[in-house]
Length: 305
Image 1 (cartoon, rainbow, N blue to C red):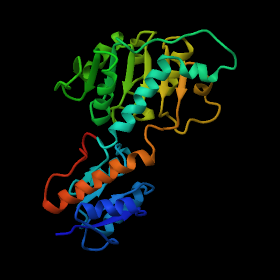
Image 2: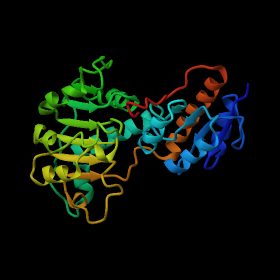
Image 3: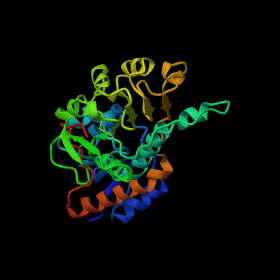
């Protein structure tokens, strides 16, 4: 059977090819449509209207790894299969996490702002105690890359099943215990109700003053006001943020003038980078839908990712 799949709000050639390669056919929404691939730009309310009008849709493919934009709707429609891009975009995001880590540790951001010749500065990543919060595809890719510099990587995840390659694995409840010995803290966890302000003033105070914070996950994982205060008071060596709260970071925000902060505009991946990965996810899921196999990237509605 060729599954009928719709693509909203607009179909691109690469997604048309992906659906066809998976054994499906792209058609406008109709009573025979089984799958819906989102390409971005569709609000939760607009998507809910589509689902109400087409109750036969059994599978929805979301365009990103994070599902927080549709979290409420996913919870209210447990009879449908929701899949995300989780795990599919690990390579580009993991690569950028490493780039930000090296840049802020080696003071590249300071040198980039300089207008005269200064003194050498920076610290090496080699041998550092690194803690990665989140052991999904991105977190595991960060582990793989960072392991070229240090053997001392702690992974923080929801359960205590060891992450291969990590020096140790702790649960979310063990985060407080590892922060005092952490020199580089990298956030790669999903945005859920439980992770909002995961790194707040109390946890920032647990980090040693020579520690660096890197966030390539979601801005609200960090209490921005608390981070601004920690940097201004020399209680943190530096922060590299690809995501912020609020986002975009407003002009004139204190973080823009903070010399210890490196800020990038949510550039962990670009459309050109993720296009082949997203196409592969769509192709595989169309095929799996056709043959009745488990879908890739299934969303756990209760967990929020």
